[in-house]
Structure formats: C-alpha cells, structure tokens
Image (cartoon, rainbow over all chains, first blue to last red; front, side, top):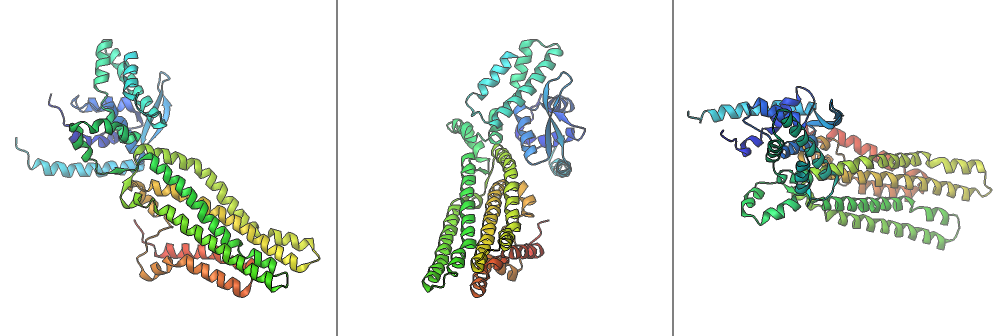
Length: 109
Length: 338
C-alpha cells in the first residue's frame, strides 16, 4: 500500500471530520473508524491527530462537544458541528475543488 | 487493556498534571479502548489488538500545542537535528501560559490603579466642601491644596499603571498567539470571572443610581446646621459615585484583560473587534482626533466647570453623559469590520 504523506493529508483532516459530523453527532473512535472505512482503509487517522483536530476545531467553534453515554453506559465525549463549522466545511470544499483542478493539470499518468 | 493503559501512562508521565493534559489522556484512552474492544470482537487476538492500537496511536508531539506543553516536548526534540526543521515550520509564536497569567495579574493591578485614580479624581472636592464651611481662608486654601494633591496622586497612578501595561505591549506587537490549552484555561477563568464581573458592575451601577440617597436622607433628617447638611449631602453623593465608578472601571478593565488575550488568536479577533469599543478604529480624521483627546478634555471640562460653579454634587453628571456620548460617536464613525 502506498502511504499517504501525512503532511499532505493533514490539511484535510478537518474536512473529513466535519463531513462525518454533518451526518450527525459522533465520538472519537466512531469517526476514526468511518474515516478508515470511507477511505477504503487507505488512510488511518492517528488518535493524537484526531484529538488534536477536535481541540483545535472546538476552540475555533467549528464543533462543540458534550458528554454522553454509549449504549453500554460508557462515558463519552460527543462532538457536534456548529453553523460556523458548516460554513468552514463549504469553504474547504470549494478550496479543494480548486486545488484539485489546478493540480490535475500537472499530473501525467 | 492493562498494556494500553500502561503505554499511555508512560507517554504522559513527564507531562504536567493540568486539566488539559488529563482531558487529553482520558479522551485518548477512551478512543483506544473503543478500538481495542472492537478489534477483539472482530476476532483478533489480544496481542494483535494491542499492537494495532499502539501503532495507530500517533505522536504526542502533535498534541504539544493543544496541551500547551510545547516547551516540554520541544526541548527534548531540540537536541535532535531531525526536529529542527519541523520547529521552523511553525510560524506562530506561542505565548507561554505563564506569561499569559502574568499578563492577567498585571491587568488586575492596572485595573485597580486606574480605578483608584478615577476614584481619587471624583472624591477630590470633598475636602473643599468641608473647608468651605469654615469661613477661614487658611482652611479653604488647605482644601484647594488637597484637590491638587489628590489629582496629583491620581495622575501618578495613571502614569504608573500605563507603564505597567506597556511592559506587555510586546505580546500584541510581536504577534504572539495563544496555544489551545492556554486559550481553554483562560476561557475557563474568564467564565468564572464573568459572574464576579456582573456582580461588581451591577453594584457599581446601583451605587451611582443611589448616589442621591444620602442627600435625600439628610434632607429629611432636618439637621439644624443647613450648611453642614449641604456639605454632607454633597460629600455623600461623591462617595457613592466614586465607589460606584471605581467598581465599574475596575471590573471592566479586568474583563478587558481576558478579552485582550483571547483576541490574540485571529479567529476570535474578527468577532470581538466589532464589540471592541476601547480602541475603535475610526478612519474619519476629525472624529479620530476628537476621540484621542476625549477623556483628558472631559476631565478638563469637569474640573473647570466644577471650580467655576462649585456645584460638585451636580457636575459629576458629565461622566456618564460623556461615556454615552462617546459610545454614540464610536458607533456612528467606527469602521465596520464586516
């Protein structure tokens, strides 16, 4: 498997997390699992990366956290996207589309 | 699971026991636990599960900024040439948590000193009010001297407190920002302070509103000496207003301290600058010029008006009016950010 350079993908962690949170509130492990699944197991986000993204986005008020309980009664921190996060997500999508258009012009098969 | 807990414990053992670090540790453990349980349910062996969880944990270095432990993680990295490049790639300068707290402490002293100065300016006519009662020139002169003396102390306090504050002006000038942990800690402190702020501010406003109560009470007390009665009423009003204004200035400036720190990081800045009435950016040159000399001018008008009329119990009204008037000017002419 070709490894994704962590430097390149780091800039898109927020986009991925926000994409998942747009589908409903979620918690750490569930998000990391979905990222793994959706990326076809090509990208596995590290726990520290994920936690760092949560704290950063929470301080920028893109997401909010609240504590809840899992079905098994385990205490968990859940995250929810805010309106600001929604706006930020759309900006990132536009940015990505632009980036993709530009970079693609330089990719030879 | 014990192995994973031990692993995390080892990773965190050299870190300070701050709330941020504890929270991070708990969150990371929770995620690792979930992953471990799921791997076991999928039929992996315990050893496989532990191996996967630990290999996918990541690097604490990544959390350094969020936890405000850069100084702890980086020195270890500093000796390692591999890390130097990475350190350079962080263009942001983080304000050490200690400096941020020192700044808050300074802002508290700054607030007390400034508020005390304002307090002295407001009560300065009280000696004169009483020396007026005695018909002696000598006493009146002493009263006048007292005014100058109190104003001089007040000015000294203003100067000293602004020198205190200027020591920290580098924070903004040199573009420091707060790391996430410090931001969170300061936000928590600010929230705690907000209750105090509300109390102090309401107390201040109530005192100003009730300022004429002593005068009213004295009026009804019908003291035989009418001149003394008037003097006491005047002094009472000034005392109430002085304490009230002290509380308002003190609480407001302390609040500014938290806000100043939290607006260092750009994100909050846009939001707060619209609410920032202290240093509004005005592009209209005439208005900007007026605003820059606004409070000194008001002070002059207050002193001149008061000395000419000797209506000290009434002239203080210039302060609230001036405050409201300034707010209106700022609202009309200040640059709108958005």
